[in-house]
Image (tube, rainbow, N blue to C red; front, side, top):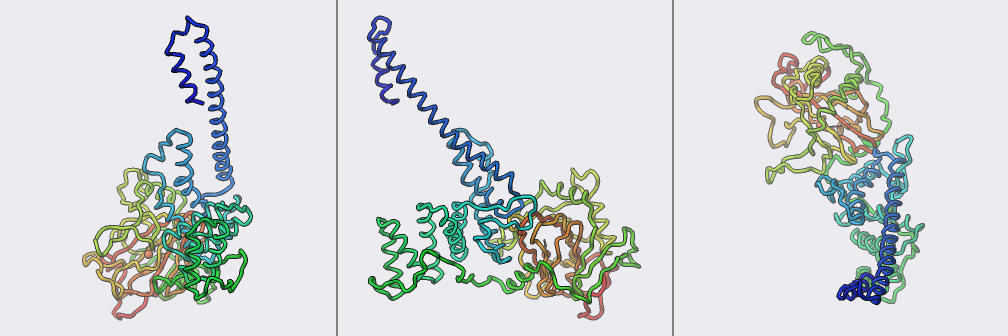
Length: 521
Ligand SMILES: O=C(O)CCC(=O)C(=O)O
Ligand SMILES: [Fe+2]
């Protein structure tokens, strides 16, 4: 249409217009076409914008109904920024400055969010289909978040591209089940294409063969499926005429597939303890009001509600030791300093992200410019009064905020355990004790488990867990290995204070017996 008008226009303007009626008639015709063409273009744009409007409205409605505390919602928002908003931006022919700023989520965030879902489903034994179609996960007054088939498929594909065929199979089967209802053949092909390869990679060639048979029916023109089919037949020692040994119809499954071996020894125990939502009652433990480690440090703060969580190693939880205002202030101060927790790569010496720790941390000094009320100094002072250890001989307050399914796998806080390469700084000594305060309460998950002690400390707001990493002799207490369970839903803020050995000599006298255990606070 446009091209036609252009030719006509060229013809008209190659002559004088006012001096001939014919030229005017042609101009008139051109204008009629121009009007039709413009109206058509505007109508197309309106239709396109109406479709966009519906899409955006749907996101708006969905956001209102669901909570960002839900891990599925966390995946969805990152996915929207990586896929949806950027496409929308080009359709709107207008740029969304946030997307160009470089701070918008990227593919790495999307992979991290999908891996977070893999982690919580493993640790808490959750089924992919249940997660995809909506589980409340302790979030009240909001609808459980669910995924579209496309989103479930994209989680499966992320697993696939990460060569994590176990999780890709679980999510692709979930997508397949969802798509049985919607019955979109293009999506069906994509799901089965990835699923066949994933299950074959895990050794289930029989199922790969059956899936490929369906793919051949759906896309006979795709030669690759024929080749794969032959390959799987060969693997199974069957010839082309043999009928399939099993026929599960279209009920593909991944339940029988086994998860690859854990990559560290204490993983099973870590996961078991994290799953213990209501811990077994231990009758030999006490609750009491802790009135301070007298006589060296007489109580100056207040009697503290204390619960023994374990006797040896001694682990206690102090309740109501941090106020809401203090929590808010510390979270605010940490805000601008939060950085992804890193570890030193032993090979290169560079700081790198570690998958075993999904958390952002910030170190707070007593001299933060924005700390107008001296919150950090007062906090340190309080810790000294409660624990009897000198907070001047300790690291700065470390504040941590966990990300999607954030966790910290089993570790020791001190470095003098057997096999540790670098013992602690000879001047400051090792981390004698840990104060771990919970500054928010996740809806589900996010407890701290102690592997050898076999306990889970609940992340209860305003409370703190305290334990000694070293025996009174100064030797390492190897039974203090602990881990942060993945946050299943909600937000987890913690703050740590690591007291060092030096400077505590008169506050915590060392024992003469090398093996004496910690029996008092
Ligand atoms: O967040 C937790 O529950 C534990 C954190 C921890 O162990 C650490 O930061 O060293
Ligand atoms: Fe720790």
